[in-house]
Image (tube, rainbow, N blue to C red):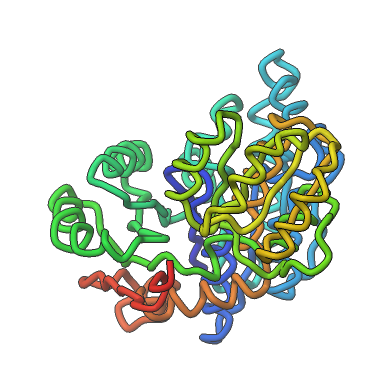
Length: 375
């Protein structure tokens, strides 16, 4: 049996979608595949009363017959962390729990895909970073990383140093079209020269880059105030309207596919945002309803207006979470990620079904030309 642990240099690199998509591709190649996420980090409740949503999705899409406490033996909640730093969690007992559940899940499997928690260093408080887990489970490690400029390689090198011989290779994810040349011509050869194998690069894909306005409204508990505005527009980022209207317009006109977050009593910012072509929706905080003039202009321009009861700071946090986790954790996202992996990575070698059972000597960089053409 092979064990592959998928970790990342930072949060929000598409690790969950990549992990489940890779497991799905292995199943399609005839392997009996298991899944585990030892440290649950994406919790619906800060006190850990609910489970991480990633194992739930994996169990559904991979058809795994296992209990949640087996798939996710540690709920890495703020309550757990607080208990750990006060000495109320025994690292050795936690390690034994992970191994016991892993062995149960791995029985009669050809491949175990183990998803890391948060980022590579998550879990250090109880000596269970992803590097520690890889050593504990004798797993090869697939590292995922973004690449926006050469300084991102600092994180890759630090991760490689931490992982040592367990590092199998690196997959770069969500790469902008403009960055592919630098990645393939400079960054990948540099890493190869340092003994770090680049397995491939996946393009930034619109289907994985954001969420619809309707999904955003659901994610933050927003009430729709406009009746005719379309809610299928894509939101990939947000801007906060907390300045004067002139400065706000300069900011809004430079952004695209954005939600503007501002107070419900800031009619000047609201009006300014509706004049910017890159604004997909307004999110008004504090429970204040805007004027009828603002609503009318929004409906004329086809821009949805959402109202939330929370303050601006809380709303920003909720929008960030919705954007970070919404699109990459859905069945459609897994399907798309599987397509991208199949195009850009030697999947057979990665999951152990290739002729040599190892990584491909030639990492393939795929520039999906239509992924961002309209942005």
